[in-house]
Amino acid sequence: MNQELTVPDMNDVSLSEVLKALADKGRRGVILDLMNRSSEEHPCSSFELPKAKSTRTHHWRVLREAGLITQREAGNGSFVRLRAHEFEECFPGLLQSIRDANKNCV
Image 1 (tube, rainbow, N blue to C red):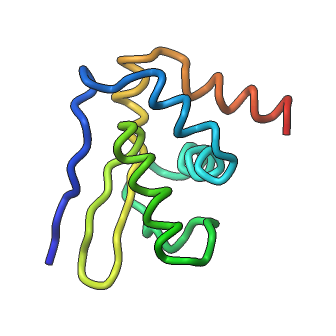
Image 2 (image 1 turned 135 degrees about the vertical axis):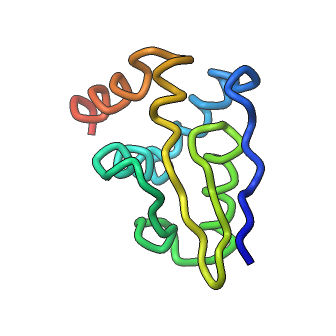
């Protein structure tokens, strides 16, 4: 089984939803972590999120529905990729601003 989960088109991404998704420290940490990794897909299990599967699933869904990541189910796992290029085109400097703000206000 190899299934790409639905993500919004960048024209439908709402800045309000993005900021709500990033308001959670754990989800923001995932995005910051992805910014420091290659632009490839990464296993969801390689990120620090709460241990409960339902909670982890919720966090991935919020990030995906906000348009920040793509997610693909494959076999026994799932993989995510930051939509960095798409975000830079739609919201220039937003992700870098989040990174900079996080450095100053940890």
